[in-house]
Image (cartoon, rainbow, N blue to C red; front, side, top):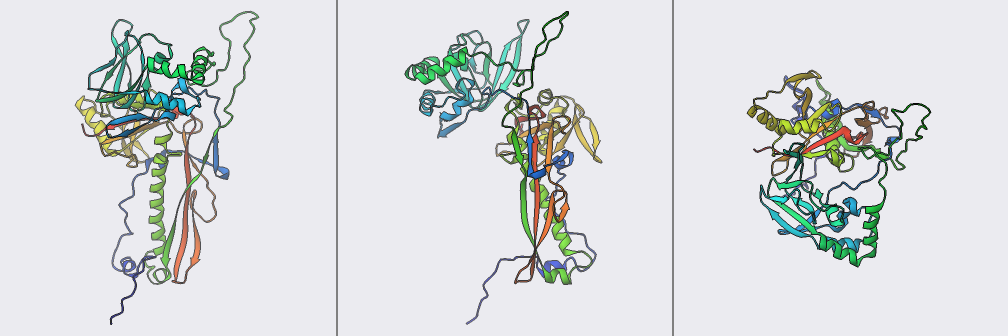
Length: 461
């Protein structure tokens, strides 16, 4: 009987592969997954002592300007009841049973592109939630012309004051830009639930009658000042109020264990150090994961932590010069755009179709495309959905500019690169050496307008 050895999973680089580096004229090992990693190059890095960075801000009043989520069974859409607290009208309302009753009163409506959903000047009698699709919000200009106010999409809403009794007619027009699924709550249905709940009735009355807190247009607590006076005018007194529970960013970690057989490092280390080459490629992979996390991580990634007021939608689908200008005007001193290479190509097509040819500039020894003299940097870590949609990020960087900063902790034991260390873990019974490779990092947004995102960017048009 022939005895077959039990296969074991390979724990380190084999000698056959190692010999490829020990004979003939050769290159160092190549890696296809290495990208420019522009985000890591342009961010200023700040030392986070103790592994935590706290962002102190002026006190900001919550105004309930989030987005509502939905569930679906087939083609039937339902409102998630707790998500109704994203409306300013229902913020901090605690009765989930009443919210469930309100969610059950929403009616699903379908609209085709070009359909008028609400008409300016007509009676306002319902609340609308956008479950799916994109709409244009327009108003009447000073001389009777139509002015586009904004483009709204999934999760946004309008008309909450119509059901609360604070608005009698629409001051704007909403028109479907794509096929839209809307969830509407008639005022009569809202009043019916209110009549059955003393808590909701009291909450709505308090909302309509409570004095508004003094705040600036960013929602921060106002600083009282006096100006333009003469004589012995009594001056305003003030203080700057701070957030009592500021956000803290804890450094994230990416780790792996690099294994190298002692036979490989002993016999095949000429002319290239095998351990050094293994480590170099491992570090490249860690840095690629670092950039991916700094963009996509739900806790601290840029795509998930942009303020909702700094998220805008494309007007027509593809990224046009108009959309990029809208993204620019949302913040002062925008320093960089980050976009998937396919999004940059789509923007180039839109510019070419209009006879516009963006300039280029040299950045870090590379020639990059610009828009309004702001570098447009490629980043393949920004996801592209199955339907061909992606996002474009705009940001201001640096502590002095109250922008976006990278966080790390330099000076680690056995440090190989700043905030990345390699620690020898020993040799096991199989004569395999192990090294623990760790990278520590995070990213922080100091003020909301430092980061903006152009969403729903279509690539296929």
